[in-house]
Structures are given as structure tokens and as C-alpha cells.
Amino acid sequence: MPLHPELPGRPELPEHPEPVTLPTDRPAGCPFDPPAGLAALRTERPLTRMRYPDGHMGWLATGYSAVRAIHADPRFSSRYELMHYPLEGGYTGELPPAPVGDLTGLDAPEHTRYRRLLMGKFTVRRMRQLTSRVEEIAGEHLDAMERRGPTADLVEAYAKPLPALMICELLGVPYEGREVFQRHAETVMTQNATMDEVTAAMAALQDILSQLVSAKRAEPTDDLLSDLTTTDLTDEELAGIGSFLLAAGLDTTANMLAHGTFALLCHPDQLAALRADPGLADQAVEELLRYLTIAHTGARSALEDVELEGQLIKAGETVTLSIQAANRDPERFPDPDTLDLHRKATGHLSFGHGIHQCLGQQLARVEMRVALPALVTRFPTLRLAVPPEEVTLRHRMNIYGVHRLPVTWDER
Image 1: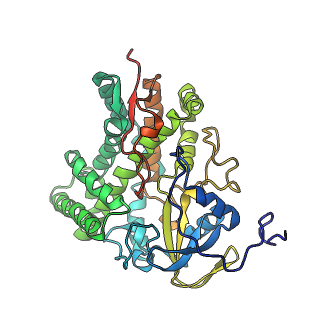
Image 2: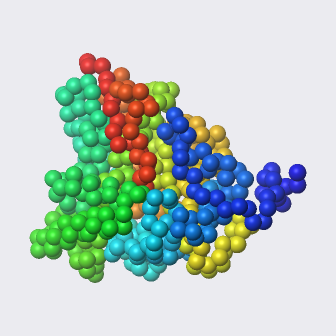
Image 3: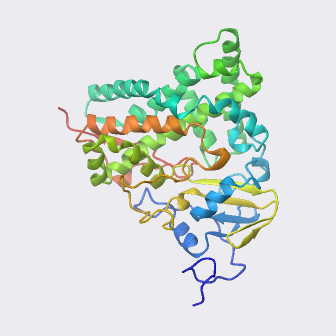
């Protein structure tokens, strides 16, 4: 069979293949693997035509090089109102613009202005200075787990409260309101929530933060929101940025901690490696981020005609970015479907790439580097309290993970 001259080893395909729909069904019994159809698409054509739920004809990118290139290319927009929603059961009408302060839905220069004000607050150095506080919070919650006895839902006992406390303290948000914040954040992250439900949840977060911003302006304290009151940001912008950071900080790291623990418990050799060598934590975190890719799908819209991977993406067409498929691309990561904590998984796209790369990634890394080794070291007999197939998974969510993770251990 003749080969494509630019893609050695890949069979030549028709110029206009039949459009696909986005695969979303994960293989039965494989809670950590992406939908099975993604790998076949990536092998055949890493950038292919896709039919969207609203009938739009756009594209699906599954190959690492294509997804990374689109993330970095300013000819692709992140503005929500220019996109078509790629997931079945979600929005089928026109998407609204990003709320004020939502950096993920903005392009330059608006995005640039916000990001410049925030980048200095989330440097590697500043986030690592928080390590001792993360260790303290982790220790307190592990103590509480041990006192309550040899079973727990790890999500509620450990995975949720640790990042919630950290982001609340960093922003200067009352931790007592965390359950309300998390409920609204989960609504925003649910794929099949209606636009009215999402709008209401975002408005509720904005209202809470608006009251807080007014209090910070009147009596500043030692926190991020108070720092930002000295900038040229309006109260509306401050509240929007605060609610954006709060929602992101609550949901993402909590799911990485819970789902990462689930993966380790289902891979006892990798769990044993981390327990034997806590110094492996840095590599373990990067590999878990790559392997699990909980923020699994993104999108961009072409602002002009762009040629990529031998295909012409026309202005106005939406490209869905399958980050989970890209992070399992064997052309970038050998044996990608194997969890290997000794792998050097740098370069994964779990935090994105380019100007929209996750602002809080260093905080998430610090939290995970501390929390996972602390957990598995404190409870050397930690194991699932139910069969793996009974763990409730977050299907139909923009952030994948588990709803609950029942665990048990032998009392000392």
C-alpha cells in the first residue's frame, strides 16, 4: 500500500474522509483509558473531519503534534462564542462569550492583560514556598482519617478538602463556604448541564466573590485578592478572576488526587515504587497527569485558513482537541497506555500549552507531590474498600475522575 510522503508508515487515506463524531465511551473495565475510538483515529489520521452535535463541520485533533501546535498558534481562538460545542448532550445553540475574568475563553490583548497581573502570583518559587502549609494540611486530614477508623471516602476525607483549603487561603476566601463553592464549580463542569444552570452557578460564584472584593478593598488582608485590589482591575473583574481561580482550584486538583490514588491502588507495582521512594514524587505526578488526563477535551476556532497535518482548516471552523488522545500518542510517549512512574513524562499537555497554559499548575504540582506520598506512606495497607468496577466515575464531566473512592486499611 502506498504511504503518505509526510507521514512515514501511515497508509494514504482519502482526501475527504467520512466525518467522525467524538468518541466518548470508555472501554468497559478500563476506568483510566480514553475512549477506545480515539486511538484508531489518531493512528489513521491525527487531524480528521468531525461532525458536531449542532451539525457544524469542523475537526478533531488526536495526535500529539497537532494538539500541541494548535495550542500554540495565535491563528486559533479560545473565545467561546466563536466555537461549536463538541460533546453530545451539551449546548447546541450559540455559546456565550466568556464571563468577565475567565482567562480560558479570551484572546489577546484581554487575556494578556489579565495574565500579566496574575503570573507573578503563581511562580514556581512562590508555590513551593507553600509546601510546608500543604504538608500541614495533609497531615491534619490524614490524622483525622486515622482517628475515624479504617474506612473512608477518600474524596471527602482528603482529596477535596486539601486543595479547597489551599485555594481558599491563597485567595482569602472563607473556607466555610467551600461546599457551596464546590457545588457551583461542579455544575459548571458538568457536560449535560443546561446553559441556564451553568449561568446561574457562575452568577452565584460571582455574587459571593463580589461581596468579598468589597470587603478586601475596605480592609485588605494578606492574600491574592487583596493584592489584586491595588491593580487597575475593576470590582467586576476582580470578582470574575476570583471565581475563575476558585472553581479551577477546587475541582481539578481534587480529582487528580482521588483519581491518581485510584490508579495507584489498581497498579500495585507502581504504588509500591512510590511508597518505597517518596523522592519519586515529581516524576510520579507528571506521569499520573499524562496517564489520566482528567481535563480531557478542549477546543479552538480558526481565525483564518490554516494548513496543518496536510489538511486545510478554514476560518470559522472549530477544532476539538483530544488532550487525552495526545497524551497517549506513541509517537511522543513510548508504550503510552502503561502507567510507569519512572517515565520522564515532561511535555505532556495536561496543563495545556502556549499562552493559555494552566495558571495554577505549579500549585497543583505542589499539592500532589506532597499529598500522594504522604497518603501512601501513612497507610501502608491502603486499598480499595469495594471492587474497582463499583467505584463511581465522573462520566459526562469536563473534568474526569471519581465521585467517591471508598478505601480501607489495617489499623495499627
